[in-house]
Amino acid sequence: MIIRVQTNIGQWRVEVGDGSSVADIERKIAETRPALNYTNPLSLDPSCTQPLDQHASLSSLGLKHGSMIYCRVDASTAAVVSISSLESAQEGNQGLASAATTAGDPKHMKRVIQPDGSIKLVHDPNSAVGSDNAFRKGMMPLRDMKMSWTLAEFNAMEDQFTFRVAAQTERWVGSEGVSMEQAEADSFQSYLRQFAFQRQRFGFLYGRFVDEEMTEEEKVNMKKREVLFGTELPGTEKEIKPKNKKVVVEAIYEPPQEADPEAAEGFVPLDDPYEEQVDKLAAMLGMKKVGWILGHPPREKGFQLSAAEVIMAAELQIEAADGIEETPFVTVRVTVGDDGNVIMEAFQVSKQCMEMVAEEALLVGENPGFCYVNETFTVIQEGKESKTVDNNFFLTVVPIHMHSSDTFVSQFPKANRDHDSRKQSHDELRKQLSKSGSAGWTFIDLLADFNLLIYLSKYLDIDTDISAICKSIVNRDIPLGEGYKLIIASMAGLDNAY
Image 1 (cartoon, rainbow, N blue to C red):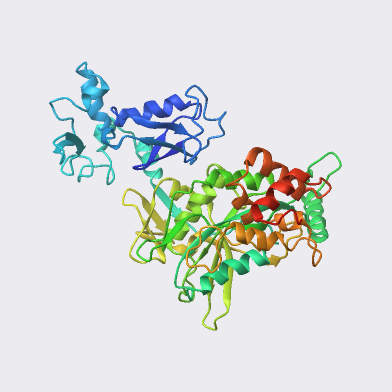
Image 2 (cartoon, rainbow, N blue to C red):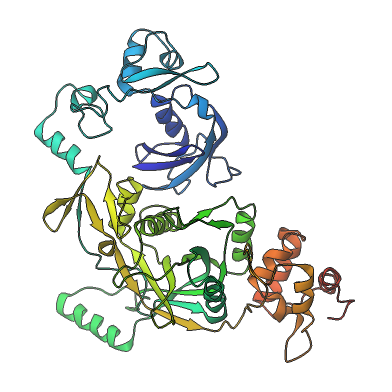
């Protein structure tokens, strides 16, 4: 299986066996990067605060084919040496480290003098790797991998790098699709309208995956199939199980980002120091990341998502599913039509798209309406080899609806917005909480605002204070302690008027 390792200098693909451990991943990396120095160890999270136990098996950690793990490395120690070079060095009784530093240059490598005078090993573009003798572009010749090949072995090798693309025919969301919280959706599109939808922006959707029950007609049809084909229904009493998921979005969080029309996505995500706190807060409120939303300028008819957006959607689905598995995780796009009305649509990308992205087989090219195929791979589309794939082949449309949340409000300024007339502040906290006791609002009603809670978590302890507040929000039968009311009211300058 393939494990993806995201580092500070790029993403690596590591192939290991099903029963492998974390140590096996490190050993596999060391085969081609023998001098590598980890500044932060292999971890489950991008911040590298959850290091993996070297002796733990991948299955015990829930890692599957396509799963992502993270680390940070010293870039100066990450020079790549080909496997055949290492084997040659080992046969000469030289260690792995010496293979990267020996005076005799390893095969497929050359020495480059750096500006500081140090010497670094890099790939030689004139070597066998990537040459006309290579099995595929960027790979070694077959003979360097193995001395002899059977036809079956060769065909199996070919199949690993060949994808037969077909139009998406299934989605993993039920017929009710995704339901967006109206006020949150309005706020997102209103901010885009400030820039006449000429700036691209994204956010993460937080909410729940809800089982969608079968209709009576569907239950009858299933029973008919049981009679015809003798299929036993699940459960001892032939209970009909929920058939799929509905996505209920209650909040949108817009992480730090910069608008950049030169970037493939139209924006550049920035480091988010509150990423873990936002996910933890969502979990305390009974929510999780269920999708992402992006806003973009108007496009020609039929052009739904760009190649960069398709690839990002696939990466997020892989992360949500913890591998290349079915997931209700959705992509929502927001733009404006020729008539000035807002267009909001939801999609999922296919499992095949997830597989191709995990293998790094898809690239962003000149035409954003197509995914370009990495030259190492072959794509067969409609019976013919193709260098590009129409993005729509990877997409399926998900029904989208609106609702007003029964639990949460959306009144506090959103995080990380520039050029916005309202900023998160204690003054905005006071304005919102001062409504308590009027127009039917209670103090806890007004605290039940995702972005307000994110703001409070910067000043209150998330594991004690914020946790207690969240319990009272989720279950209104649990009263919020007077002490917490006093602290928050004092922060807002309300003089205990709550």
